Image 1: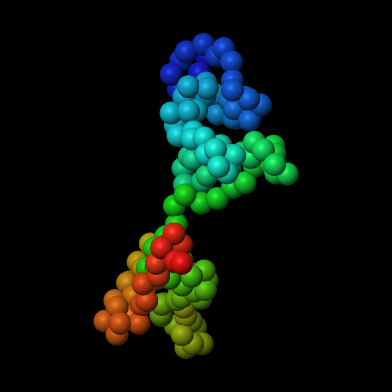
Image 2: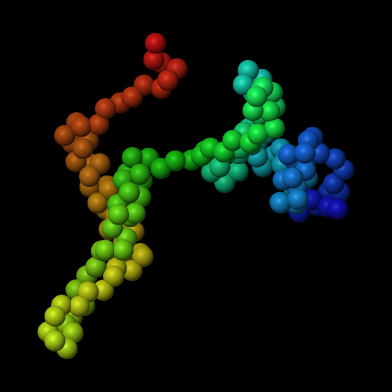
Length: 147
């Protein structure tokens, strides 16, 4: 078999985990190492793989040996988080007038996805700008800086 990315013939894998990823992606060991930026973190005894905003921890020692943990490698900033929360809350209830029905009652039309995304992003941006203006945001030091 050949790698789906580089086309080289597949010969061997470092471990069962890499072989499993080959079955799912078709990538040889070398391409997996390049794409997922495999790093060995000796103090924590785990391998870290990252792809498309998701990280995978393969524990190689201790009671978690053989287990895989999943974590995010990309997260939205404060504006993005607020926009996502607004989107979750208001996606199904934001409407705009759409004339009247035959009985003279107001008809409502759901906003298009593009209109909805634009609205929640504008609200999030306005909210964060106002919080900054009022000095209501507090800087938090990274964990390594806290004693």
